[in-house]
Amino acid sequence: MKNPNKIKISWLDSCPNCDCSEHVVETVEGTNEWLYSSDKVTCGECEHTGEIEADGETAWVNWDEVKVNDSP
Image (cartoon, rainbow, N blue to C red; front, side):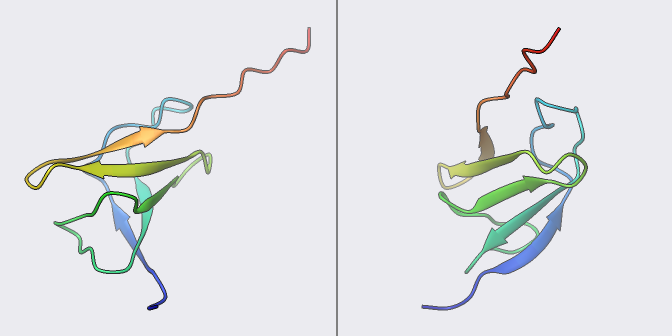
């Protein structure tokens, strides 16, 4: 299996944790313009993570749940 490439992307959904729109995508076959379902996404600012979902023409991020700080 090939090692994933890390690509900087700025056209995906904004991070729900910090609203940043610049992310790093780890993909084996994707490019700056074409991503695949299950590619891993990391926010370029706060490192929140998620996964790409794609339907053939469109790709978006299914972000992991945002953890809320419960301390007073």
